[in-house]
Length: 57
Image 1 (spheres, rainbow, N blue to C red):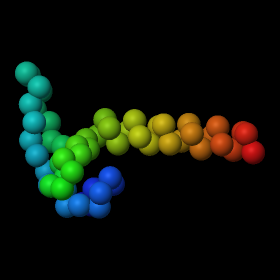
Image 2 (cartoon, rainbow, N blue to C red):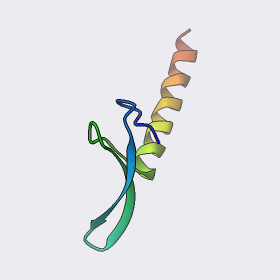
Image 3 (cartoon, rainbow, N blue to C red):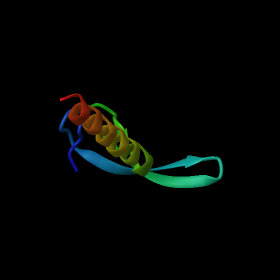
Image 4 (cartoon, one colour):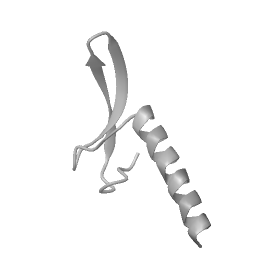
């Protein structure tokens, strides 16, 4: 997987938050972290931004 921020190599890392263990993609170059929640929120915000742009045109 390529990093969306710097196009660097991303690897799968296992993190834990007290009781929950989850996997994230982490970039070797810039340290950017991507997980399901981050990707879902980006998708939603991009869809909202596109709808605002189409209304204003």
